[in-house]
Length: 287
Length: 308
Image (cartoon, rainbow over all chains, first blue to last red; front, side, top):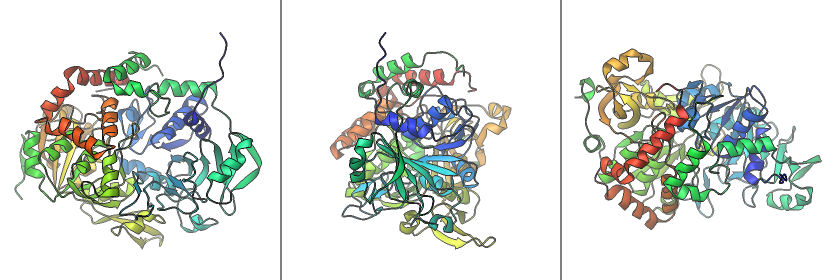
């Protein structure tokens, strides 16, 4: 059989790239959507003794199904522990969590994030777009060992000034975060669908470290709302491997998290059931 | 205070507890978030047209969307308000952005700090300190959050006020008739909510005997002295899941999210799934036995080998 080129979308690219930042043995606190996929890929592909903890309070679940939130039943399937939310996030504050994955609708050059509101012509009380709010993002950004930021690179979300600072990165840069006495280390990198950014060791400003295609450099610059610095050793983003893709397809056959367009299966309950039944045969968990 | 807490048989029905304990203008919190979310309770609160409520919590999805869309809430103290991966709920957005059907006052917290409010409330103290929130705009726009120097280390901490809602509804897997409640899987902050609220109502998938409770007391998340009433409410979290009992009804959630994109769409949904269903049983009948049994069977498949 002829081997087709591996097909992947922006979500697959981001999830696989972020996954590679999670190291073996680490405890990772994971948020909804793509970050979940990243955490699971890490554990299944290159970091078998890494462990996912969810804000919802469950520790080290081994689920056959993709969790669709930080507190659904999939997050407690064959878990090691199930605790209250305040206990889990207390453990985070105390320094037990090595790495966290967070997102937002806006990020600035110092990795500060907004997931609360886009003001537009309005205000906090009457914003143009009201978003979900912090959830655990502020807590993770404040206290986690280090954070990975995941978000799409669009024209309006890499901004020179946030409307609302939900989750602290390096604040105003330089030693501002250290002076603020936030116990977590701050953002290590920003993974997007077109590029990866890191932060300068001194002034903590975000710079371009990897790009999907070097020919897109100018396009990426245009999407960033400040004069973007580029690493002299700019690398090409590595696409998902076959193994990484296999994990994503297996866990998310409906493409709900990874957006692979299985919308039709969700329109109808019987189709939904059919996909679940086909993809998760009725047998005991063997792992 | 005369209290139902001292009774041994507290079993009653959903309409009665909502009617009795939810008064216009009172503060409420709903247990669970996604897992065990008190969605049936939210529908009943709407059905009884309760108004001017303050909703306190950490995160809410379907239940919060229904309450805010029906205009029951005047104030929301929360960290996260969303539907989840199938799409966002537009009721919260429409309320805050456009004031439709009304604009609730929102007090933002983070998940941890929102949780600590209930922890303080559950222990009878007035506030809790945290290292979160500092240097963010959460603190800037929420005047209830203060900062101070830790009197022992001198380091700055943020303070959040205790939350003691007037009534909490907590949906659990199992409870005995006196209210000893067993929660499996995701706990959220529910053992703490139950203690922080002035009145705590347990709704449950199944009533079990006190004898069964006594076979493994460590499983009791909420002891009966916190509990005012117990309501058997099978599938009380639908379309959200209950660990070990049924999985998420994703097509239902997606339909809700899509219809909530317009005010008319949401009102149509409300008509169909709240007003046209006289009670929770009518709602389940409309869903159909096949659908709810299938959701239960799928959950079993994923939990095979786990204690239930």
